[in-house]
Image (cartoon, rainbow, N blue to C red):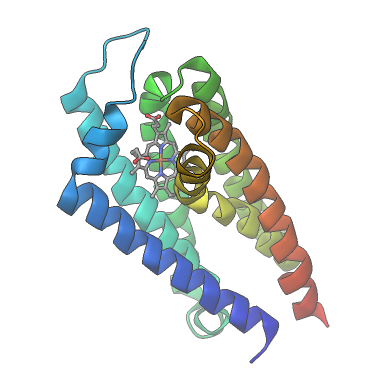
Length: 211
Ligand code: HEM
């Protein structure tokens, strides 16, 4: 099996496992959300829990859809056999990303950790759609290689939540840092790590495709 195929299967597996985990914990169990909300102290504005929950459900639904749409579009065989589907699915991915960042824009001012956390979230609200639009513009100019590279950079951010929770667990449960501090550090660290992960994928997998 080629490196790119192995990497693709690993990505599909990670996305599928994470979707099952997110839906199970947030829709079926619901308690992690209540747990998560318990860390929101010292907020500048009162949190409307009912509205926040509704927005969060839309956020999670489209986050999962963006994960699926993106994963499907990285499949070389789907691209080869169903070009029109790839294009439509690509626009669906863009719309999903836009809905995730819009809902994120609502939740960011109430982020755990206050302003220090809402700043990186709002940065992501700009960077993620920007990378996605750049990727689409590249293919409009028939720059296939650059299209793939920018889509890899964009797709890395579907792992934002996974990365934040994994790092928070490491800092909070692992080395005993306060939850809020751990969460804030994890948001910043996730942005850096996901950008680096995308560059690594571009070097290892996409450079390999050229050979
Ligand atoms: C695509 C995969 C993503 C999934 C599955 C996801 C899921 C979630 C979930 C379940 C929550 C509720 C709190 C928690 O349990 O963490 C949440 C909160 C949030 N998400 Fe996402 N998310 C994703 C990506 C993103 C991205 C890319 C951004 C930024 C552009 C973002 C911004 C936010 C914000 C601002 C909150 C509120 C954080 C807080 O209240 O402290 N999410 N997300």
